[in-house]
Length: 137
Image 1 (cartoon, one colour):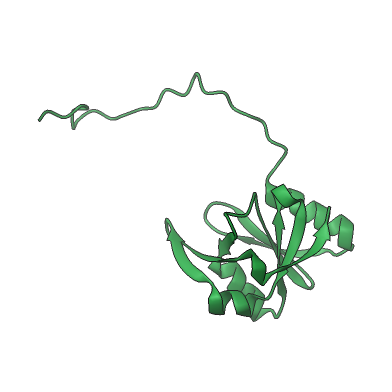
Image 2: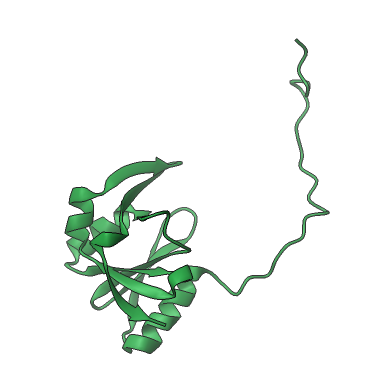
């Protein structure tokens, strides 16, 4: 059976007709701004991977964000959970469609969560029920 695209042909996408949306920034950045205003806490560190910023660190929490809950499951980088344990801080997750922050004990997440891989990134899935809603915007 012949190839649809010959082996020596490089596929190049045509993106001239793709409409680009200008967003209002990342959910994580927006969550950080809301958190700073609501709690009057300062951000002391930015946690990043190869793609970009994945969490912010304040004096007492590690802050990450998600668009929505997948059924009853949320996920984050395992490295964020590990950092929260190492620094003895709570993990705060902003859920955009709930417009709320949830607090999680990172030790519980590591013990009961399920580790998976998204590309080369090690993620951990866990139940939203492990957390408590702490702030509503």
